[in-house]
Image (cartoon, rainbow, N blue to C red; front, side, top):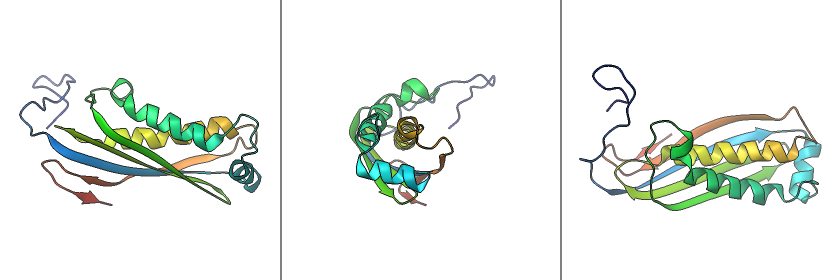
Length: 152
């Protein structure tokens, strides 16, 4: 499959001939920050409000809009999106799970959820630490589809 047609022009891949199957993807990423900023997030003491709840909602909302953000990405009927945040002494690890029953996978939705949740964490805590670092964004696993299961 390719995102280019015979002339080299970009196109959305035609998935019409693919079977509808249950698919799931899990992605993760991390934001590191000062111990003071991390402590404020864990204590719920950030002036902008509940940082973790806001990041969770932002991640879920972003997964639902992935096709609007990523060119050539198929819009999918998501059956599940979860965003888990694990704060610790030096930052927050975000893990997102996306699921669907469709003709193409949900890796981009899981990755978009993680990325947006991390950006939201940065936005809400930037007054405490402008030197935060976002990274380690990656696909951890995928289930379903023609190519089957994959684990990092």
